[in-house]
Amino acid sequence: TLFVDADVVGAADGLGWATAYNDLQAALDDAASRNSDEVAENDVEQLWIAEGVYAPSKRLESGDARSAAFSLADGVTLYGGFAGTETELAQRDWSVHETILSGDIGTIDDAADNAYTVVYCGEDVTAALDGVTVTGGNADGSYSSSYRERRYGGGVYNAGTLDLRNAV
Image (cartoon, rainbow, N blue to C red; front, side):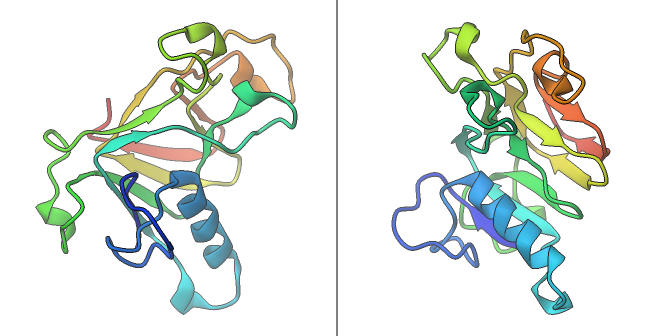
């Protein structure tokens, strides 16, 4: 399990709430890296995400700021709804501690410069979202067979296998 809390300041290794990543994509990248190495003990199956608003930063398409999306890691479930003190998954309350994945990456409340898609689940990726709110995607871009998320899936673009639970 890796931890994410937008309010944490300082060195982050994601191994506990006190040293949680404050950038969700950094945690996803770390999980993907750990899961692709040869050491099974390093594998990450869960990301615990504290309440707050998280904006995507990883561009799916070089040079296009609106292509920023949370690119999910294979085999990883994102659990939202934590206050940031829990020690067990059953302690979270996603209805009280809202975890928001927002595509509002440009001018606030101006959808014209929002991310095309907020959450991207690529081919050959099996992942899950549980206890998160996805908002602010705007898939109004021109169609491209290479970048379908520009036109489809403002909230979530799924080309893999994605399980959604307790998600808005």
